[in-house]
Image 1 (cartoon, protein in one colour):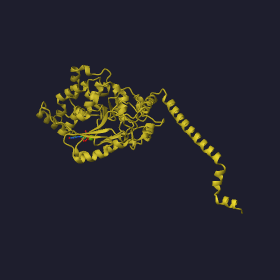
Image 2: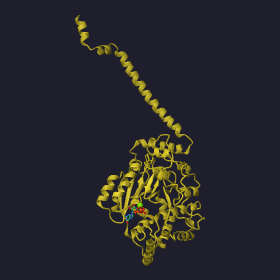
Image 3: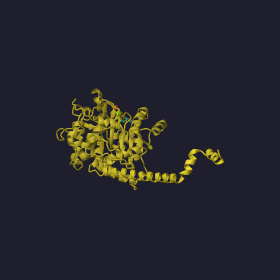
Image 4: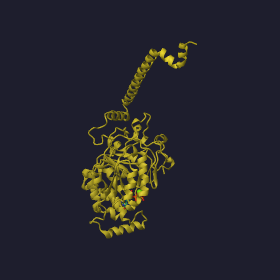
Length: 443
Ligand SMILES: Nc1nc2c(ncn2[C@@H]2O[C@H](COP(=O)(O)OP(=O)(O)OP(=O)(O)O)[C@@H](O)[C@H]2O)c(=O)[nH]1
Ligand SMILES: [Mg+2]
């Protein structure tokens, strides 16, 4: 074995290989880099073109998405104070094209907007007692987990007494947006001067005899009156256009796949509900006659394209007591701030029914919505899954329940029942189709 051979043996075999083919290897690596770069660019282009082609579909849902997608590429509306907002979960803006909308939303001709990186001027709002804290925490978690952890909307808490430090600590730890805590002015939470207290006591006695819930509760009456006429006037709500009322005793069962506030704006909706029921006759004996005298004094506030057929079975002569259950309520603050609504509330308030009887905010809001708004501005929400004691909303369509990861039992759904519940009546009044599966609930 010569010295040269020895040297060759000391150099490892791969090194000899690389030395011999150094030029070819350099070419191959450079080629590979070029090919990979080309592939990367082309793939991006194909992806972009396919999405654009799909977005170009004439279907209104896709058109809406296309508009939003274009906006989001430019970072949303630059003039908006919220334009720096980005959803924390990027996957939400890449909704797959097999996304399904509930049948009722197709029937109501609405679109589910895609996220565009622009947060609406909206907030959750909760009127609540300090003592409700440990029930409220569950409601907050439902709303945060199913919706707000992607959007970080603010949360306004309102109370007739100061919130405790513990209440603020716990709720601010659970919410993903800013929290604000407001004290209600005492004149909005006390019996007004024009109320005859003897008459009020007589009314309460009657309701106790009738075994009506909260028959003689004054705080309950303040709560109903506050929700009817004042929550939207609280200065903490001044900066917002939309609200979602979240009570301390609610449950959400499904993921909400879209920005529910953007939904209201894009579809021009002023109020949304999920369950609708019939009120107790004894709590509102003079509500309708008061409403009728309001409209005879303010006929200009009656919308020509109203939804009277939902609240009256005889063309407006009597009230059928149907109302949107207000423990779930998403709506436009502009509606409540309008002259029409303010005139309406002031008229009702002066009549005294919040105290002499026990008018609830639900019939008060619903009658206003069905008379003052255009019928197209009201929306029935589906696909969310909801519970407030003692009724359930659980989507009837399995594909919606699976897509939205609902954990409710559809057999307990109350939405489409005909006795006591009113959603079928709403669909009939609004001339909308109901989903398959809804027809079977006739009791
Ligand atoms: N600050 C404050 N909040 C109240 C008061 N009464 C009720 N609330 C809140 O107003 C909302 C509605 O009150 P509820 O007592 O649940 O009324 P309801 O839903 O008609 O009655 P239930 O069927 O018993 O649930 C809840 O979020 C309560 O926490 C009160 O006296 N003070
Ligand atoms: Mg409640």
